[in-house]
Length: 354
Ligand code: TXA
Ligand code: MG
Image 1 (spheres, rainbow, N blue to C red):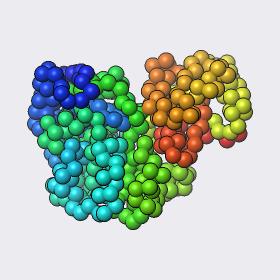
Image 2 (image 1 turned 135 degrees about the vertical axis):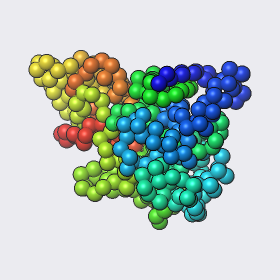
Image 3 (image 1 turned 30 degrees about the horizontal axis):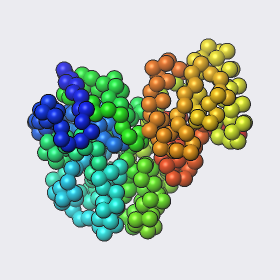
Image 4 (image 1 turned 30 degrees about the vertical axis):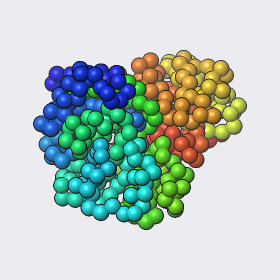
């Protein structure tokens, strides 16, 4: 398949005449069952018509994704939810008012319009109303219901820049819309609204604390915070190894000076046995590290920077051919919870506690 790559430089409406043409073409592709990768405020999505079984099958094939791992349907107007959601509880309406458009996905009971191919056989559907102007315009042009997983090959880190979408999806989709770098860098928070109190199935930029402020009591899926609990996660996708760089990643937790000493020694020993070593650190400690490749993931005082850079840093280690990676560990509160959740999955839960 020949993949058309187009750039959208405008940050929002008005779009240039050329950009309008690109959106029109993307819309036609989606409406006729094709696939278009596009930017959102979290990560890039791999979009197809969410109400068309054939497009949905193509999404799974392009990603190499297991069929029991359901997709999120993206909308561009709140009212459009009525066609795909059977009933919208009060808490969901309140969450929509507070956080939509934005990086929040809600699990709600589905109508018959939503094919079981999208939901992996479940009677619920994941719905998200993104804030990114390019995403919204594309969804609108594509008929209003765009099913989109993250635009990476299954198991790889989610792409936050078009470069990595091209790397994974060139030749597998009809079109890639390059809208620049993602702002948030981690996928949306997923909240199950079919239970009371609402339950977080995947942590993200919208934190438990933020949700509690808007909704009152909010639960969190145990498997997110206790990965060894032996329970199956409620979001089917959370059970797979994910976000994994090619190198073997280990998280090191403990007092900073001990972490630095441990990582430097481990990296030196690995290098002596022929490995190419990497360290993921935060700005404050960066100068203390010694490995073949040392990367700054961000600044602990501004956790958003860490969220934004994490997947890119993991991908860059692949570009550098690093085979052993050590990373600092992060908080289990606030945004740190989402960062740590992705890092743990990327490491296959390999953590050294000092
Ligand atoms: O930020 C995001 O959410 C990005 C952008 C593109 O919007 N999308 C994304 O999609 O991360 P994906 O497919 O990579 O992750 C969707 C997650 C999976 O873990 C899946 O199991 C869960 O949502 N999910 C989807 N439908 C569900 C349902 N009905 N019940 C429970 N979990 C569901
Ligand atoms: Mg994904």
